[in-house]
Each structure stands twice: as C-alpha cells, then as structure tokens.
Length: 164
Image (tube, rainbow, N blue to C red; front, side, top):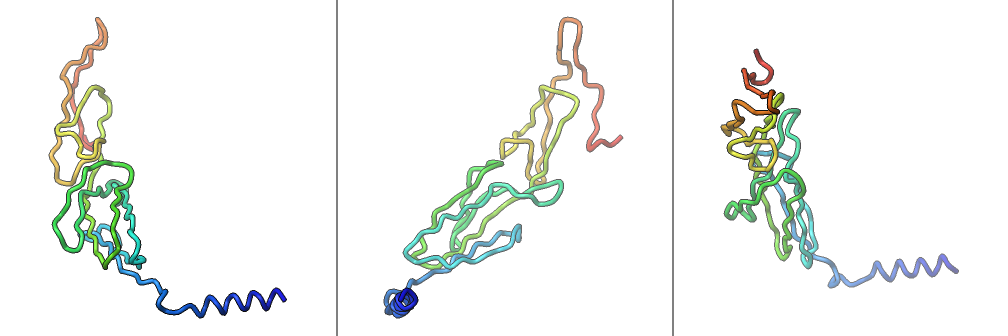
C-alpha cells in the first residue's frame, strides 16, 4: 500500500500544468582582460542574485589581482572602494538577462626589512603593502633614528630584491 501511495504522489506532481513553470534569466559574469574565467548562471526571474567576488585573488607566486570596479550591461565603469580582504557584493535583480564585467589590476608586494619606522609614499590603495602595477612608490625613513641616549640607527645603504 505504501508503494502505491508514493507512486500516486509522484504522478500528481509530474502533471502540474506548465503555467506554473519558472522562468529564468541568464547572468553572465566576465572579467576584463580575462583576469579569471567567465561564468553563466540561470536565475529565477522573480529573484535577485547576490554576486560576491573576493577583493583580491592570487595571480601567481609574487602577485595578485585586486578588484577596482565593474560595469553592468555594457554601461559605465563603476569604481569601488579598494580593500585587500573580504568580498565585494552587489545585489542584481534578475527581472531580465544581465551581463557584469569585473575590472581588476595586478598588484605586487613591497617589503622593507632591517629598519622600522618607515612609511610608503603614496600609501597602498588597498591599505597594506601591495601596490598597483606600474606605480612609483617612495619609502620614507628618517636618516637617523635615536634608540636610546647612547644608541642610534643610521641607514648606511640599501638593496633592491637582495641584489648587490
């Protein structure tokens, strides 16, 4: 008897009129300059979709990409606030098909060893020690730093990437 009852329920649900079918719209997400692989989603047209993208992701062993903005449906570039960590999100109403292009820029880390009390000029756009490709950065550090009454730190030289 249980088998018959389950079979009848399946038949009833499979014969629902097509007027109750769900319509979907396509969301296409791509990246300028192919920074990552594009993807497509079919979303219920009565829904909105919360697109979430990491602000930064690995490019290779010595660099990363950082999100700088987006455009919707071939519209204007929309710049976003830059940060190193977390996710950028945007709520997209799926009342029609949409395409989103995300824009990112390569970044490289700048590390200073052997001294303290330094700063980068200009500051990193992401608030850390990562800088956009082709950015000129100055490292500001006092020539002499007093450590105590009879000890001070004096810069006598520097190297770039541990070169001679």
